[in-house]
Every structure is written in C-alpha cells, then in structure tokens.
Image (cartoon, protein in one colour):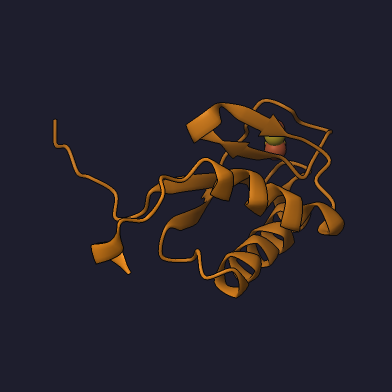
Length: 99
Ligand code: FES
C-alpha cells in the first residue's frame, strides 16, 4: 500500500456517475464549485473531485464534504456560495508564513 498526502486541505466530492441521474447536473455543479472557489481564492486549498454514486440517487446533484461528513442533496446553483462558505469555515486558519 502506498500513502500520499493531498496538496489540498479539503476535498469536495461531487457525484458525476456516468450512468446515474447526477451526470449532467453534477458536472455543471462541479464547474460552478471550482469557479466559486477560485473567486474566493480558495482553489489552492479546496479541491473539487468527481465521484461515483454517493448513495443519494434521485436527489442530485449530490455533494459530499468529507471533512465534516456532510451529504448535500438537490444542490442548486444558488446553493454554491453557501456550500463553499461552509467548507471554508472548516478550514484551518492560514498561518502567516502560508500567505
Ligand atoms: S448516482 Fe449520484 S448519488 Fe447515486
């Protein structure tokens, strides 16, 4: 087994399962999350990763934020800012030498 530390402090998983109902909406949501993270200057701290089924089929798009074990369902475009803010609130405060 190999072990690798991630370069990001947090990961947001977005279901984009190809044969599921989340595929199209999940892909669009993933792009919106990445854009919002970039707008907020968090893109180097938080990574958005496509994922397979997150266990809430039919309630997509579905997002999981593993840091706080939250599953977000029926995420709308208007929810993206709140979702990113919730993830950002869980990030450690940057040290002075990280800036
Ligand atoms: S296919 Fe997306 S949660 Fe199951």
